Image (cartoon, rainbow, N blue to C red; front, side):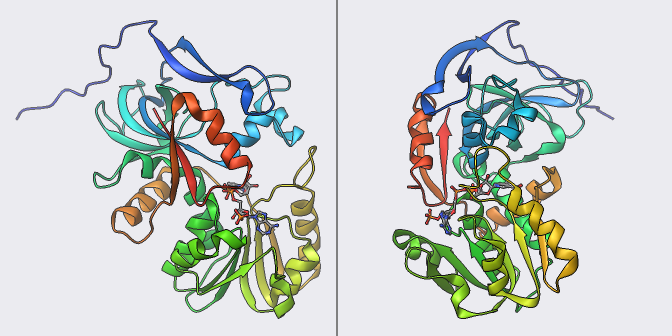
Length: 338
Ligand SMILES: NC(=O)c1ccc[n+]([C@@H]2O[C@H](COP(=O)([O-])OP(=O)(O)OC[C@H]3O[C@@H](n4cnc5c(N)ncnc54)[C@H](OP(=O)(O)O)[C@@H]3O)[C@@H](O)[C@H]2O)c1
């Protein structure tokens, strides 16, 4: 019997440098600068990925600005502990740690890593999945954080069922564009809330109805929804409850404009209120899991969901991409091509 020896390292020169978008402090997009820095090496349960494309999500924007300030307890008080930002990536495995079992050198992967806005980034194997061959690197790189969030919010927190009516507030963005498609996939009747210029985009994702938040209040139509995914707009709990059926569930995922300090006051109030009312108000933080990434990769390959690429930027134009995200000008998500 011929046994194939497992390749655990490739001939990468030691101490090699790489191009990376580095952030030496918190602030506006101008804190991101292109530098040559040492290429990282994988720890025992990590792989080193040669990045083809990195996804730009709101999380990367929060780490860039260091807001809300509460985040700095995790990411570093004065400067980010991880100087290269970006979490979502797609690329090729070029080195594996000694404890890695699921990936080999040469594997095409996508998932969540550390410092994705760079030529190379390390990622834990339990936050990666194999990239389906028919899916482009750009598309795969905009899946990880946003689609996993939408999937878990619908399936685990919202326990969505076929035939239910689901309201997605913030349907045109990173998380929302997946939430609308996945809610349809689970057989729900879906209403998407977004701004005027993105109504057609949200319809194209499969929403049965759309609400323009600049001209209409989604809660004025009464208690219509079994499940609300609250992703954008920072609605008051009173307003969410006004749109939710008496036994309905609201999953609060995020929303900008909740203040610079804590940012999750509304979520905490929801959790405190929920035991005393018939409706179920839940706060939610996504778990980064390779099983969910594998599942989502399969759904993308099968054409059940389509990552909505709102544009691609070369690595040295990451600040421009951040500004576009900040302006609210993106439908779906942006990718950084490395
Ligand atoms: N809990 C978690 O684990 C988790 C995971 C990922 C993200 N998040 C959070 O979720 C939020 C959204 O992330 P994202 O990546 O989807 O951001 P995004 O791509 O910037 O999308 C934001 C969405 O909010 C909508 N929106 C803005 N103002 C609104 C308003 N007044 N009323 C209703 N909708 C409004 C936008 O619509 P228009 O573009 O049409 O204006 C857009 O659809 C962020 O706060 C992020 O930090 C949380």
